[in-house]
Length: 208
Image 1 (cartoon, rainbow, N blue to C red):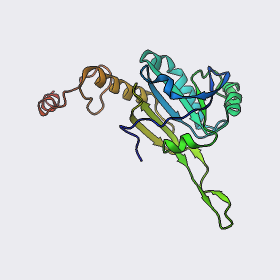
Image 2 (image 1 turned 180 degrees about the vertical axis):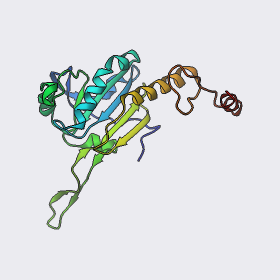
Image 3 (image 1 turned 30 degrees about the vertical axis):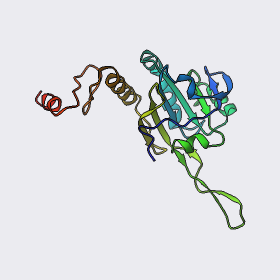
Image 4 (image 1 turned 90 degrees about the vertical axis):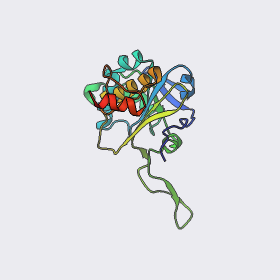
């Protein structure tokens, strides 16, 4: 089920912050009333598409900060695995240099709550617990406003990397509508004209 228009699920979990410090009970609640958040999931540490995404987001970290938006990543690996990957050099497949928080969804409840968990648990004939999939996260991404409400979500399958540029575009659109009360038409980007949410506004925009 989509989380659009709903409060983002609450969680507390271990995380690595600043690329080198493991903390307990990390939560998105700390940003409520203060900042927008881009919260994104990736499948696994020490893989292939994943480091390209995490580095791509890091390269634009300043652009998110300028927009008063926090980046937070998450996978089902442990905090120790995150820490090891964050301390592995880029030319060896690591994500050294990534400074935004990386959450450890060890019990997979965060991925499940956000609807991005690939697989589920069931019981076998002998009553044993059986996983029906890989039990890792798809490439989910959620844009959350200062009130903790989700305004944008995407979910990609494992082989398909995401566009950081598109994430920034959607963040700009949300912040524009919040500030100006207008709506953003197809292919809108920062600096382009938006429109009033009226028939007259649509007619004026289309007549350009």
